[in-house]
Length: 362
Image (cartoon, rainbow, N blue to C red; front, side, top):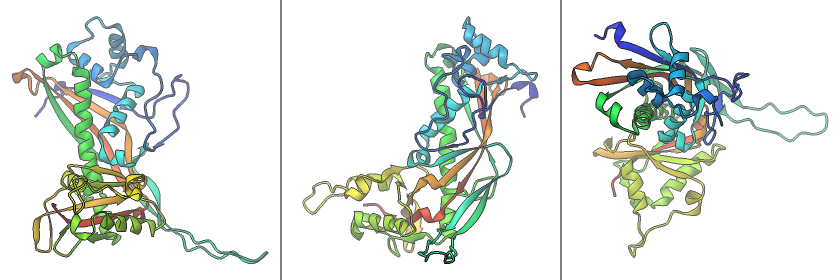
């Protein structure tokens, strides 16, 4: 058990201030391509990053006046440090860059309460033609609601003191390690979170409940055996039939490279049709397994998620804490950095997605 004096914390608030520091940044929903990071930061933070602050907390400022000022200004009563919102926003952007779901188009929503409701579309409205002064037809649009309830996600990165002291790129390594560890688990939860055991509810469970999943064949099949790209186009059509347009496929690495290697009867590479090549981003994630079972195909199947991923939204509680464990790993001359955030995934429109299962290796 770690003693209290082992823990020195970094806390940061995502809400922050604008580049002039005069007013809160009121934007809370960020789509793909929209950066949380401000265009410029306060002059006292020039050249600083979360990694720089982390290194400085262990080794000190070593004559770096900007780092010394940042450490002095951020010191709290518990011996920890508060990171400026500008720096934290850059860290979250780095995390998003490493997340496959954010590459697919998922949005991020900054939460400022423990529970936040999100309106969802169960079915779309239907307009009707009408005569002058006639009554307007009632729409059969159905709205629903889901609730963000942030769950706790943590990752521990250990680093030797020698590496901290001698590596010229350690600040970037620290940021990348923390961001990658958090992004990987966020991706997994967004797809396969159980909704229990302190996990968010992932897209797989939502689509299963909404009956928006189908199998390529009863006992699994290769993509090439079912019309190659035609099977993918048919799934895109199912999203279109629900009044939306798919913007990404997310699949296992095996399926991704199998598709890239499809060939025609003469052995020439089979190019994707324009509807896929020009409109839909094809991505892979190690979170998608190739060990699923379909019928008699035991432990050898995979699956593909497709849809408009703008409707898969991560709610991020506007605080990140990084603690330094000075004594826990001191016997090996190591320091531990423990990063902790709270987040939850929600699907704002289940009809924007489809799930294709039973995919065998080529």
